Length: 192
Image (cartoon, rainbow, N blue to C red):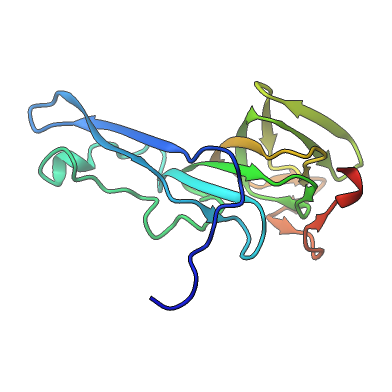
């Protein structure tokens, strides 16, 4: 193999994903149990993502292992789609490890996002300048708003996200569509 293997900069443990399903008799069974590989959210960046599950439609099709002939064989819709941040027609489940001193670009997705802070602390910033510090156990219902994430601490923060495709927001005749700020993420070394 040429090149070097990417090293996970996050000290947080990798994410183990357990998926349930059905055997050919209709009984529940475990069809997958493994530690998922990490990906960098942005190439060369410090944010680490674990892409955990994806559906391409709602209601979701959750019987692919039965059609495939049994447990252990299921259509894992994350395969080949893991780098997509969200889907407009289905759902995405992922975790993100936010690096110390990092600031994401401002962005809006056409999605309803449920975010759960599992470890550490992170600041959610809105485009009007409002900020809220979120700690372990806090949750956010992000409703297609322009926002950024900032980690003011010296430790990684882990956030779990469930993202559901949503209709675009319409305000005074203007569609608030997906948008990404032109500025790249910046490090906040002075805050550490």
